[in-house]
Amino acid sequence: MNLILLGAPGSGKGTLSEFLCEKNGFTQLSTGDLFRENISNKTQLGLEAQKYMNEGNLVPDSVTNSMVENYLKEKAQDLIFDGFPRTDDQALALDNMLEKLNDQIDKVIYLDIDESVLLGRLTGRLICKVCKRSYHKVNRKPLNEGVCDFDGGELFTRPDDQEDKIKTRLEAYHSQTAPLIKFYNDKILKVEAGNCTPEELYNRVVEVMGA
Ligand code: AMP
Image (cartoon, rainbow, N blue to C red; front, side, top):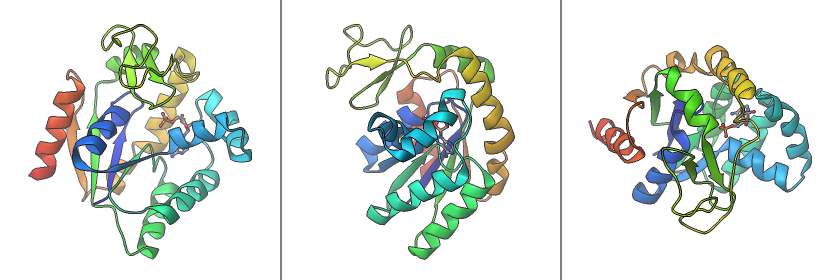
């Protein structure tokens, strides 16, 4: 089964992916993580993507789609698409890629959240350099400051988690990504993602998926 997690930046897609991978055997395909990996490895793709990411804008579809197509050559089953697709063009491309592999998207989990919560979540977010788990400066502190509970990796703040970049990312979400809720109309499972812990969100998702 392949899932898409659809939702605004800060709605909890990454943390939910962690839970679904650990407890349900999925593999996470996060285009944001793939771009960041390319940036730290200083690849050509990373250099290209960085220009857009630094400003909070979407990386062009052609670049993003071919990165995903490459990934799918290695694995195309039991995936969680986290942060992809983000545009109509990407959604159509993904359908084509999966069709060629005799596969498909089975369900799309839409994380619905009040926008007022997002800014606080993102400006306080800390990410582990090693495992990419996320923490929060106030609401989900690590046991030891600056260090991941799981692997001791250094925690950092993403450069695009600054207020002005967040604003641009939210605009991109509303204008280009939110219309996908209609595109996936027959596969959407809507889950309320505000006012809950990551564990509660995971439980809500499991419940709607079983329904
Ligand atoms: P994320 O880690 O999902 O929040 O993504 C961080 C940034 O990576 C986004 O703000 C975009 O600049 C870029 N990005 C990630 N996924 C995509 C995508 N599917 N299409 C275009 N840009 C993307």
